[in-house]
Amino acid sequence: MKSAIIVLAAAAALAGSAGGARAQISDDVVKIGVLTDMSSLYADATGKGSLAATQMAVEDFGGKVKGKPVEVVSGDHQNKADVGVALARNWFDNDKVDAVFDVPTSSVALAIQQLTREKQKIFINSGGGTSDLTGVACSSYTAHWTYDTYALSNVAGRAMVKRGEDTWFFVTADYAFGAALERDASNVVKETGGKVLGDVRHPLNTSDFSSYLLQAQASKAKVVALANAGGDTTNALKQAAEFGLMKGGQKLIALLLEITDVHAIGLKDGQGLILTDAFYWDRDDDTRAFSKRFLERVGHMPTMIQAGLYSATMHYLKAIDAIGTDDSTKVMAQMKATPIHDFFARDGHLREDGRMVHDMYLFEVKTPAESKGDWDLYKLLATVPGDEAFRPLDKGGCALVKSH
Image (tube, rainbow, N blue to C red; front, side, top):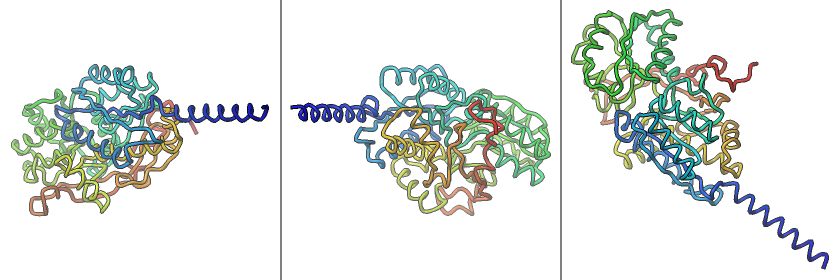
């Protein structure tokens, strides 16, 4: 009788233990929310392609982790912080979402970062650019995966100033991303021995750049730098060609230019542009294989933001699988402890400030004569190792970084 009681007690303990293990996946589902721009100026670079990249990773992972389903939901934040926060808060409070991904538009990303800190939920940012996400505003729940304003400015700005293109004028989007991009680029120009002759701010999602470009032209700066993104960048570049800025001897640099932007502009107007990117579809066999699948599904080659989201989703799911829980603190610790080796990042690693460090690339847009096909748009000028491209760990002002 006594042995029977012991056996029963052991069985009950095992059952309790198994139940506890099952409960490690909260609500018996891992749910990812892709919060993005589905309808405005960043929709091509992010939007439906961001959702598709995340879904592709989940499908390739097998659709489950530790026997529990992985679900993906999406929302359009309309580039408004209050809309984004309301959507994400509802996801957390009512829809059992475990992590928010993407979030282009830095002002929205900063607001979501504050919410995810409050809710202790993981935030993997691919679309937002401000380097403040891993600087003064850093959070132990955030991974900044793909690019940031420091890396964009550092890679292209340093290269151009060293070539003698040392006087700059900025045409800047008037919100958090544009301000951070101009700030980081200005610092690089000055540190490398150049001068900033002036700047002008334009509203987000504007259609008429004539007055801003005339001011840039009048400055006589060797470089006119566009500190904006998406539709703002493509509109500015097309109008700059009409005004003859480059024919007049000024160099034009788009500090954030996606492959979908270059495709929309066309090589006739885009040829010779210098840009920094984290990904190019034609880099090697692995990037070509992923990009071919993405093209068939979405209709265009993946941007760095979309490719980065596939990489981030896989890393997130692998972390949950490795430790058997979707607890945010434990998952982030596992993500930081595990190197990233995939088609997007070679020898990538996630730092304590949340920055995912990986190689960045300096490209020049091909001439029409150099291009061999519809998406054959870039030629590689330089590969910059992540530790050189991204801001040094001790320079961002992140409170998570221990002083050494």
